[in-house]
Length: 409
Image 1: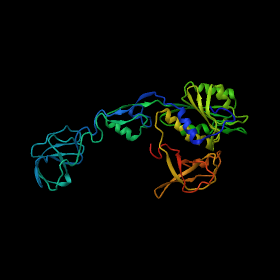
Image 2: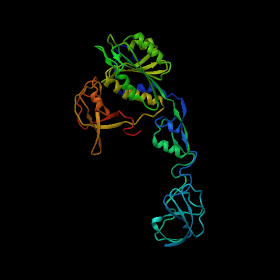
Image 3: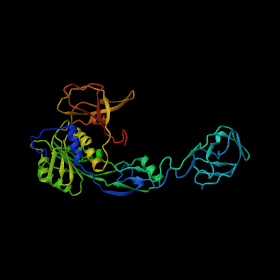
Image 4: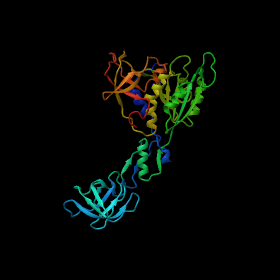
């Protein structure tokens, strides 16, 4: 454990690895109706109970024929029979053409579908005036999905494509990871709920709503509470939170000042910390550990530091609890310059753009972890590694988009 006032700051990437390693998948699932599964995390593999397509079907409106044993064109065949999508499969009359619609089952005995644009019909006779390749315009049974094939694996987020696929194979209930229960505790005697009046020296709590909005998704349940600057009061809230929460998050109180009470409260609540400082700006006083069985993250109190800590550390912990694989990393070219230090990672709010096929990141506002407007103007943070040389335009760095769905799923 790094739980001591003099503990050094862990490198940013090391801290990320420690945070993820501390979390373990919940390994608890529930069945939900398909209509309620969007955004949830799949808890078990899905094998296709039937094929897609489930039968050989026409890919075009036209005529089903048999070219077996035939040589040369044009052909003139009598039109006998008709099959539309949804009809039972018909039978191709010998030496005839069978009228067929897109998606309809191929009649028994047919091996080719000729699109109607390549035919001329006169009464009951159909002339096929173009060369036609045997097997043309047929969707074969199972060419998209084989019966029994594993089509989705645990840890996948169910989006609209997965909903469509599951519906197509007839699945109406899906096993998903149970929601991660997150307790967000904002600390500070100066905090007031929005909507009321403010006494001199008080401020509205923005970190609680910030974190609830940042972490709210179909796979999370979030409970908000506040605690005044008192170690015993904070410890009571933390102990209560461990009764139901999988992840407890606090804001403020993680430094070593006289009014930084969260560290003491962790000990009172029976918790242990693996990290108490991370070599990054903003957000150096960031703590990660466990209270009972619940994961714990102590975020700084300034809004940027709280938000960026949640993006870099809390989101990966939530993903791990849900059994998801680590998200692929996204890089962008920086479009600004500024100084930096060799002993810390800089987290910079940026606006992403695509310029000549390259993803670029522009700074969204002035420095200051207390500032909110740079976050409003941003859609990602750039993770700039420490170095003794300044940041230069064109440098490629990792970026963390604010939105899950900005790049991939």
